[in-house]
Image 1: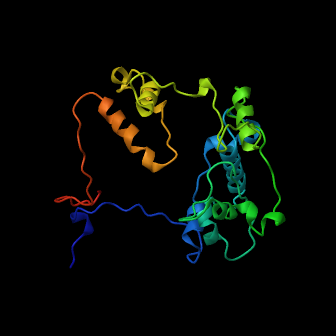
Image 2 (image 1 turned 30 degrees about the vertical axis):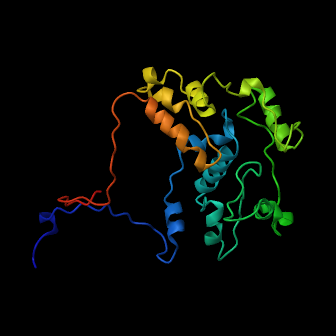
Image 3 (image 1 turned 180 degrees about the vertical axis):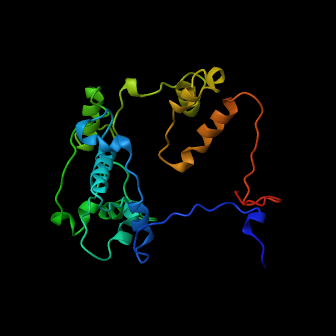
Length: 245
């Protein structure tokens, strides 16, 4: 009793006063405190390279928030949490030709049935389409190729597979397996450039399934020079009074 808190090794807590109703949900309080990035304020007067859906979302959020209104950005899994109560304007965006919803232990047909276009509210929505491929506009051949695939117009060979041109494939080298050829092609001169952040971040090998990741990953690790080190994670540490970890 009678002791000052300043004598103890306790981290300072930054207090923030929100001029909001204490009964409002946490998401609304957080959204009211969001600062609009400077690069999003001027979106109406520019159209940058490689922009599309994300650019549009940021522009809409900036416009609404600059008017002092609340704009909640959420993934589809979080839409239900912001629906209850009051009238709201909702903007749903996405690309039906990209990742489908995840339906555990489901069939292809059942997964398709879960997309928005199969919902009973789809006919009631106003649809706005983004039709220009901004990322591929410098390569019209590749852009047209993607559109033909999306429209189901590209010629198939067998089992509904599409033949890729030689310019888009990695040729299998002699006495090598496909994964080794892929790693060597994408990460050529790795031992000379493994310290370069630009070299590493400008390259990537994508896999369609987690089970296909391990082998290329092990090959990549084996190609890095120097000794391998293993870093052990931890949940807590001893003799640390500030509890920063």
